[in-house]
Image 1 (spheres, rainbow, N blue to C red):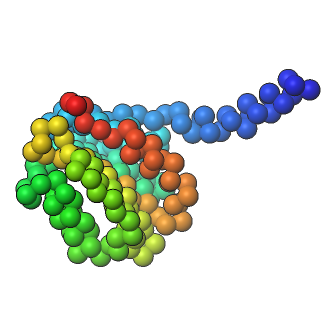
Image 2 (cartoon, rainbow, N blue to C red; image 1 turned 60 degrees about the horizontal axis):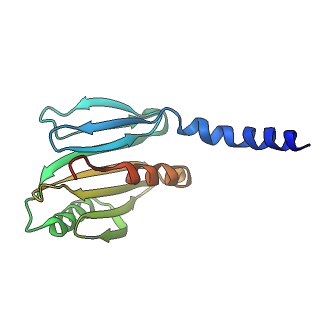
Image 3 (cartoon, rainbow, N blue to C red; image 1 turned 90 degrees about the horizontal axis):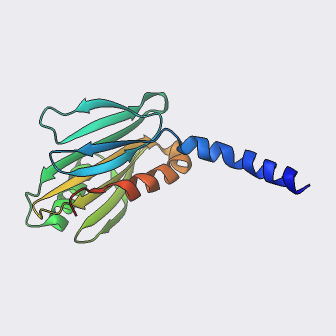
Amino acid sequence: MRILIVVLLALIALPATAQELGWGRYDNARFGYTSEIPAGFSGYGESDNGDGQIFDNASKAQVLSFWGANITAEDFEAEVAARMGYAERDGWNIAYQATTSYWASFSGVMGQRMFYTRMIALCDGLSYAAMTVQYSAAQAADMKPRVERLVAGFRDLGC
């Protein structure tokens, strides 16, 4: 009986484990940041200036973008505020935001689309890296664990 229970538990856990397989990794040499890439996402290659890359899961209409840039505002927090302002100007309704001196997260909704952005201050104190994932509002529950894993794995390579 115990063997049957163990086998059943293993079979139940198998889909979750299989879903985690296939995650890749993206390292950006120019700005020195890294992130995991969910299974099913394909990259378009690094941008011409080497600041980032766009990945998509075309079958699910999901887009994952990474970029690095120099801080042009007075500090990281002001840079984050500017980025949120750009999102609002583009029609996104900001639904969540959290900002510290070294990371920030904000998300928003426009129609049936959602986005989540994570920004991190890089070790040089002069630049930042950003990650944005866009997806259908209907996919929010499925995307939550992926976004959490993306956030956990998005970091500066130099600190």
